[in-house]
Length: 164
Image (cartoon, rainbow, N blue to C red; front, side, top):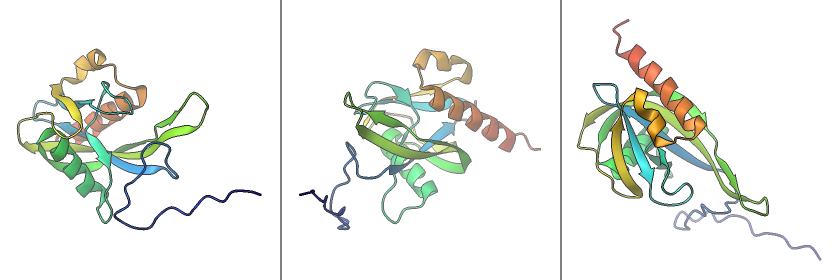
């Protein structure tokens, strides 16, 4: 007799299962730049990748646009208000456990954004928040995909502010 898994709940009050999900989860993040061209980085406070550095972001909420989700996540994690620019990349982290099962699977849409206001401070699930110069990124041991997104976002941000 074969077992049939129940269909995922459509109840909006059912919590999303991040670990061992039944489908990829949609996330958003933003490479936020201040007037000096420094990027806002956060140190993760929770799995996956607890303790590692990356861009502020998180899961998209039901009935939320991608840009609104990026604004909300940056504010929740860093207390910073932003103006969202264009998409800088799509990042698809998939983490498998020792048995090879998908433990985490996200599809993250990354934007570049301008800092508008607020002093960067860690809150929500961020352990730390810093403004980092582009030439100082080596000190943060970013994942290669994160580094590529930041560099592409910086190029897009710089082009948008060049007056060309």
